[in-house]
Length: 238
Length: 279
Image (cartoon, each protein chain N blue to C red):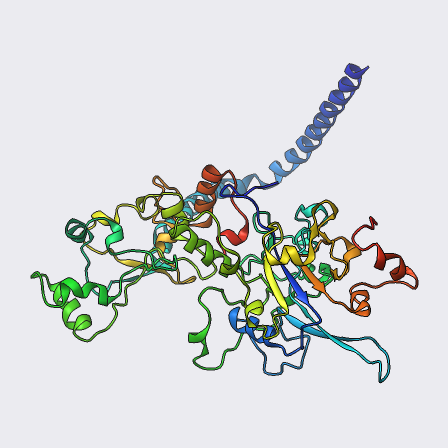
């Protein structure tokens, strides 16, 4: 029963294809006769068209993937260079400068006051330290650091939950910043105003290390693995 | 149901003693300043103004000398839906998942960056607890510096509502983590309106925790959708089965009756077997 229905259907399809072929064939023959002369010229036109298409594609493709990212991000330099590696060597781990406040909040980048213990006066001979001492220590000003990992305003990130409660390493999100000897150029997205480190350096959105990107999906991915759920919105939003 | 891995689930709720409320409006002011709620040039335009916490005035409708007035503060009710499965009216209609129910705290969130302003939730909310930003907030010059950094300000085109000062819970937890405690204390997480009320009419705490004052005040019946066992306690529009987490208490019968729209004769059936009627 079912076989016969399928046969009928298949027959039907073939029949209609055959019908179309004969119809098109007859129409095509008439056209060929009428426009045989024009066709020779049309072939070279098609060649140029293909070339033009490929050329335009390459131009658009390259500008989209190479030029646009450069246009999208403006480059800013930090007020002066900071040598993390040197400080880690002298001071110890990350928490000797980046610590928690008593109320459980994270104090982020230290204030000038906490640098005074050592940098009241010039310690070394670098130009960067000279800038720090003359421009900020002596004038009692805070350094306007550009924060690479600054999250959007709607995000609540708890360092306490990740570092103290879950016992995570700073490196898992911040990478090898402790081994850097210079501060890299800060790239700001001209449209959103966010740091490029949030989207990640790779414009394709690929990541090799857990610290390559800091988007919501990256948070969710880890939460899914570690806690079995991405969590409710208010866990990370405010 | 999703469980919080770090401990048992909370169910934060609020109890308002309507006999204590004087209608002074301190809770509204505290709420606005705590949560960066924008104010308008003309606050009397109620279609435009935003009040996460709003004090309503109700009367018993009788003429002098029997006239009585009651002030009723109304935050978001953080409905858990029937059986506390998180099917709050607003959450179940949001097409963008911009609002969700947190099973670990019982709080209904609102994510402004995710909301695209369709306002279904406003239509769904039977308590008028949700507000739409028709305009970008305009702060008087210099006031941006006084906004709370713990609450993100809203932009034009999104819906906002009371969050039970959720950021205070986040901060209390942070402190607990650093002090290596498993859970927070009752007094560590209190909403701004609770602390601002000069009459002490608002109480806030965990409805799942029998040690908390809110639990003792209303005695929520876990087997009956959290209905209060205390006969003086009631919830707004109880029969919609939205399962709100805001309870009201009043000694006055007409106030309790005003908590829902009863047809003639209906109230008489409900008022005595309070908490036992399965409808």
